[in-house]
Image (tube, rainbow, N blue to C red; front, side, top):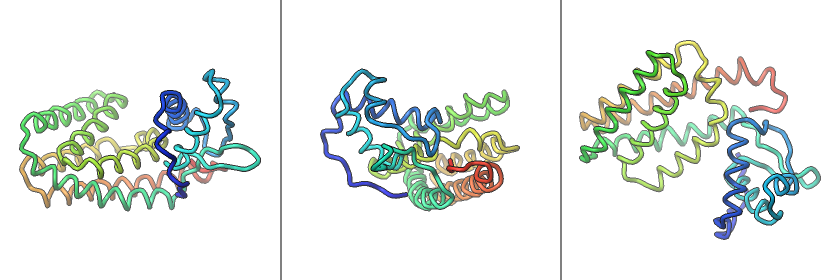
Length: 232
């Protein structure tokens, strides 16, 4: 996935952040479709602000891989390819495996209890066929593991990568048997972390992400890419 030069620190002004959150949410929830175009004037009018903070938000989203600039047509919502998924998961498997290993060394009983409770919530949501509650618990579980690792830089990279492929999560969750398989994989990771088995936790996390990558690949090749002109 191509990256622009990193924008300057002035991107953190309130109006820039408002524009950034507004556009990013629309991309992640597919209100802005892959391959669609938007302009700074269009967004500025919708938000009731000048074009300058919107342009800065566009530059940050380009740097993060959500938009690409077009000299004549404005800004284009980036289309994820199979190559992008492989690149994202190459990094995720390495980093999240390492973070799971570090999480196994966490002695904070409050965090360990949160991990147990969230895993129980995932299982309960699966039994109730509550996909939204399951998705929320899944995100929270990984967030807790990242926190237990106490490696803020690596955790931020993982969160950024997750945002990039978030838009295809709903299609993945609809795959037959996906939630049941995912629950088993998550439970194996949690058991190793709580047992203090760092090597086992890393092995289970890498296995979980390897399986997830394979299911995403099948989803893209069999369901999405044959019928999508622009990608996902």
